[in-house]
Length: 186
Ligand code: SF4
Ligand code: SF4
Image 1 (spheres, helix red, strand yellow):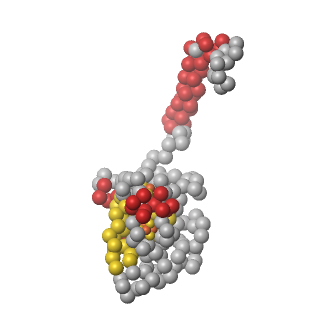
Image 2 (cartoon, rainbow, N blue to C red; image 1 turned 180 degrees about the horizontal axis):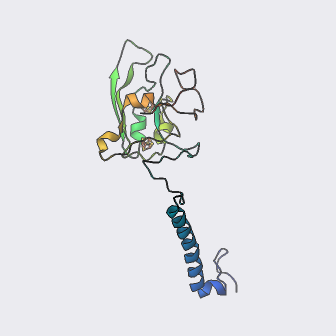
């Protein structure tokens, strides 16, 4: 029979009987379930589920967008010029910046006095990194460890963002570092 359109699905007799495909699916699901259950009963880890926060995954992709980092200049001050572009583009509205002015520093008169990210709302899209004209904010593949019952504790402060250093995935050197960073856990 001629197809009505080129990729119209075709069903053979086996598909049309339907119930056998349902049984086949149940067998696959059941074998995985009982296999995992047997491993669990014999004190082995079966499923791939990570029991967060007691257990942290270590196999994130190198392209994973995890922790935000605020880069610094050679003098140790924050690279950010407080332009607010990251906060403007952020779809979760979770970046808060309070600007300060230092007119004794003609090359960097404006910088954040307070730069905070609310990790209870961040969706790790990376738009803030893309929008930054100063390479002042980056994301490393490390993940923020913020489990808790109080949202107030899920704010990453400016000090934390400046001191979270990537473990090994620094694609390029970080301003002011001049050397490989060591992992610093909050
Ligand atoms: S990663 Fe996305 S949601 Fe998170 S702070 Fe950046 S722009 Fe906002
Ligand atoms: S991190 Fe970048 S985009 Fe955000 S305020 Fe600072 S300079 Fe602007």
